[in-house]
Length: 154
View 1 (tube, rainbow, N blue to C red):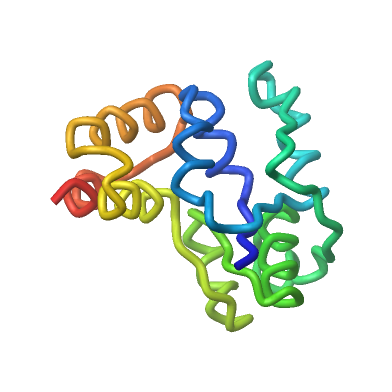
View 2: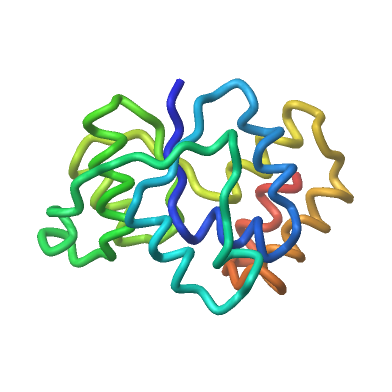
């Protein structure tokens, strides 16, 4: 299955030094980011993010015309559009973008679900999941509520 990843997810894993986990948990899938997401990554001040490229993650062309319709960033809009056009699964965290995905009938999950999936597949244990969450929130500037953190690690 094709999986398209939004900026918040990939940048959080890059900043936290956990790209390997992301690739491992999604190893059965064909991975993409859109050109718009790549541009957002290049605009980041963090060097790990700014210079991102990886042979497993392909760069895809996608429209971002739905950005205005839903009031979301062009990166998120391009991820949703690519997922809709390609029948791909989207990884998005932003609440408005999730609502847009629902409106566009796109299947999605967030970064927290990837960690939960890593636990389920026994790629990581509970302690490692907690460490990844801490790293993503502290270094990757990702926000996960205490409720979500608990749900992931239960």
